[in-house]
Amino acid sequence: MRLPAVFNPYHDRCLTSDREDAPKIRRNNLVEYMRAAEGRVSSVWFGRDLGYRGGRRTGLALTDEQHLTAFSERYGGISVVKATCGPIVGERTATVVWGVIRQMPTPPFLWNVFPFHPHTPGDPMSNRCHTPSERRSCATLLSSLIDWLQPERIVAIGNDAYKGLTDMGYSATCVRHPSYGGQTDFIRGIREIYGLSSTDSLPHQQSLF
Image (cartoon, rainbow, N blue to C red; front, side, top):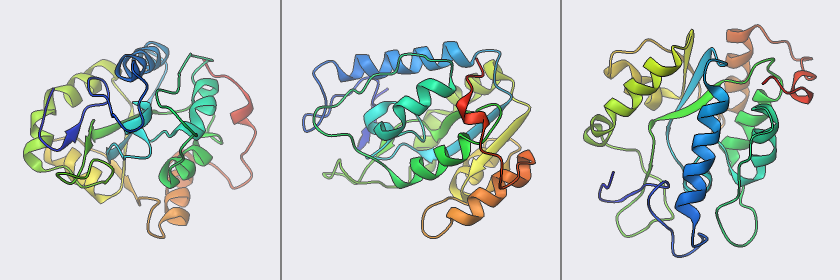
């Protein structure tokens, strides 16, 4: 899929930071992830879209390069590979999200309402909210994912993700996005949904798959 001012990490290569085979690496990361999750997850968490410091680089929603090892461990030791050159890059949202996932007995499946990285025209290292028409162009991907996973619970991270899901007819529970001062509310919201206490910290040491 090709769209103007949109980076598709499974097809496009960033000439600034990507390895030569980066799109193939990200496709393989995604395939390994989907194979590990099939029949084993009961929740899906939806972000809005991929960010330039996170999923644009890894091909994995809500996951930056700093958390690839944690990602692998939580999903049964699957092989996920860094697709870029140079130092590891982190993302604040991914850091908060993975801090919570480490406390959960079973990790959710992570995805985005718009599964690519929309950016300002002419500035690929920027983030913008995807448009309704861009979201509609990917609606069949989202519906196929939900039909495949059959999740018991759908969580929208932030109002933009919640609006995108409800506009497409899906019921979701909304938690505040962790950015712009929302970290505490996000953590509290997830703990309330899943009945986690502030002392729950051991499950991240176990592989659930």
